[in-house]
Amino acid sequence: MQPPASSASVARRTGRFITLEGPDGAGKTLQAQRLVEALEARGLHVRSTREPGGTALGERVRSILLSADGPPISPRADALLFNAARAQLVAEVIRPALEAGTIVVGARHADSTLAYQGYGAGVPLAELRALADVALGDLRPDRTILLDLPVEVGLGRKTADGVTRFEASFDVAFHQRVRDGFLALAAAEPERWVVIDAAAPADDVAAGVLEAALAIL
Image 1 (cartoon, rainbow, N blue to C red):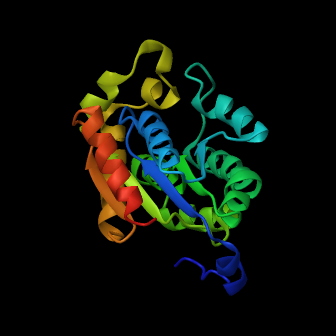
Image 2: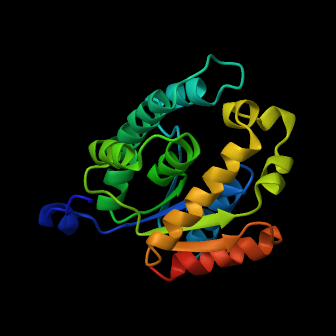
């Protein structure tokens, strides 16, 4: 169960938090940038973030988590590291931006940890949700857009210089569990999630992402 937001925090938060999720190769970074540009073209104040990263601490953690030639990391250690970087990003960037009335567009957020370390690697979801509560407090996205596509298509899009530890060290079955996990999360919260076919042409995907974002603005 998620903790209730305090009335004070709700009163302070005037921005909107939109996240893009999906399996590897779905185009989250590209589509997040296109969404930011489209919203800014409409005169809106937008801040983009990425996970892990987005702060000095987060970028250092990112180098550990995603390095394809780094040492093995246990699923629980992964979850702790991702949430440590996420807690810093929330405190330093996301929450202040929302309180200032800014729209925040994030490429990945806490749902990625549920999908990868939970559905993919087998860490109990209850443990991961409790950890997210510590990292996020009462913060939850207003809209989460799932860029969904077949695992083989997504992995086939990755170039050699863009391969992370998760593509290099985990098999197709793992990535299929991750995709299935994202779809399960979306089905459980249809009021927050919108699922878009990321195998479609990039312009069609961008149009769907923008429509999903504008629906809550």
